[in-house]
Length: 277
Ligand code: PDD
Image (cartoon, rainbow, N blue to C red; front, side, top):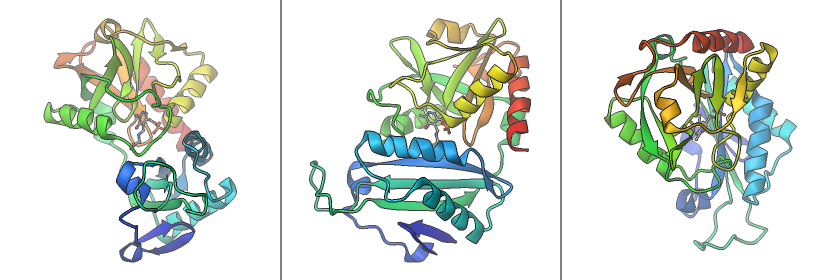
């Protein structure tokens, strides 16, 4: 398998990262996960847009133009002959003697990327998944797709240990998002989700869904909702690059609605698949 380090495509066994890379030591960097359907990046432009914006928010300059980076990713996908999968890319502030202060300008950021085959989670999409509620203990810049994912990992691990697919997070009783997804409820035919503030990552899947809803006259309300609203919702679902539109049919051990994926969730799944099929 081939990977990318800066602008070089090489065998994975040849890739070298310095032990003082700031991504490794501090989580000082940003990343993206882009879906590949049938050999083609889905919403690649939007993901790159967010990548550049995340980097800018932490004062790292991406050492490529967007076009160049897209070309490099496409090259990597081709080299690895990826059909259905994903490309992971990250950019760190580079390698330099450990110091909290940013290194001097001549230290170059380090870009790495690799691809993998990932099947669509068809069974879970069909039957729905279980979720649990957890405290959102993250920082106040969740809009940045930062490498620092420790609170997300702790929440996901807790969920997994309870037999759940996802942890739905809340701050003081208001639902923000999932540990690695955006979260939504359906009440009386209306979709509700947390607005795209500093408290959530504005998912690309979320943005696609907002557009789909607009085009199909489905009410998409960007308004924070409470844990009570979550527990009493007609339908719950989460979205992400790899989870797509994932129905949540059990919350903290209690069935959501009749315990099957909801009607509107199903409709959104159908409309979403049309975006890449
Ligand atoms: N996670 N919120 C968080 C905290 C996330 O980590 C993600 C994505 C999303 C959904 O964003 P998008 O629709 O752009 O994938 C929301 C990725 C997939 C990951 O870390 O693996």
